[in-house]
Image (cartoon, rainbow, N blue to C red; front, side, top):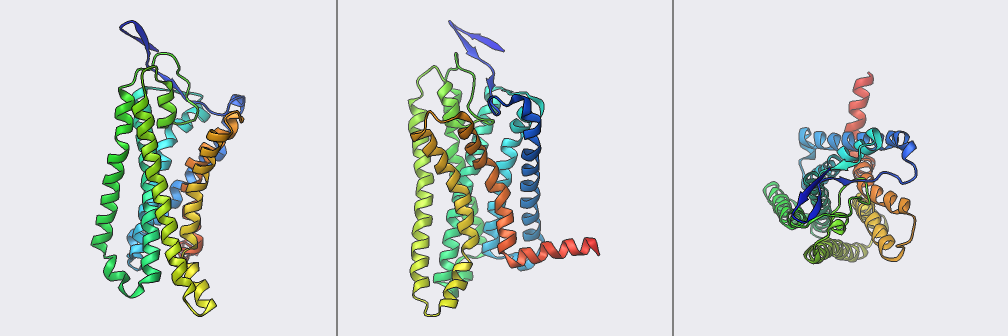
Length: 313
C-alpha cells in the first residue's frame, strides 16, 4: 500500500467514500444508483440513435442535442466504475494515476456540458431573433467546427489538472470526500505546495461562470425579442421552444451552485449533505436531460413512442 520516497512515505492508494455511517446499507443504496445509471445511459444512447438515423432530425438544434447527450454519456461512464466498486463491492481504494485520469474525464465532460449549454443558448437566440438566416448561419459544417473547437478548448483547459496533481507529493492523508475523484478534493491531500492547483482551479471555475453569464445574456436578448412580438399566443409559442434548454441549464447549474454554497457557508454541515449534493451533480443531469428533451421535443417523443408501438404490435 505504501512506497518509500527518500525520507518520506508516499501514498500509493487513495480511498474514496460512500455514505459515512451507512456502510452496511451500501448494497441497497447501489440499487437506485444502478437504475439511475442504466436509465441515463439508455436515454442518451436513444437520443443519439434517433438523431443519427432519422434524416428529419439532421438540424443544428438536434446536432447540439447530440453533443449534450455525448457529454452526459461521458459524465456517467467516467464515474460509474468507482461508484459501483464502492456501493456494490465495498472496494474504495483507487491508485493515484487512476484517480487523476477519472478527475480529468469528469471535469472534462462537465466543462463540455457547460460549453454545449452555452452553444445551445446561441442556437435559440439565432432561431428566435434571426429565423430567416438560421439555416445559413448554422450549417452542418459550421456546427461540426463549433463542436470540435469547444472540445479542443475544454481538453486544453482541463489537461493541466491531472498534470499538476501528478507533480504533487502525497504522504499523509489518503481519504477523499466523495465516491469519485475531483481536482479540488485530491489537491487537499497533498503535503507539498499546491498554490498552482488552487489558482488554476479558480481560473477554471471562472470560465464556467462566464459560460453561465453568456447564457444569461443570450436569454436577455431573446426576452427582448419576444416582448416585441404583438401576439401573446405567439410569444408563448416562441418561449416554449426554450423550455427544454432552460430546464437543462437549471438541472446542470443548480447542484453546482448548491454545492459551492454548502462548501463556502456551511462548512460544518453534515458530510452526508455534501456527498448527496455532489452525487446529484453527477447523476441527475445525465438522467434528466434525455427525459426533458423526449417530453418537450415532439419529434423525438413521437419517434420513441412509434418504436415502442412497433414492438408491441
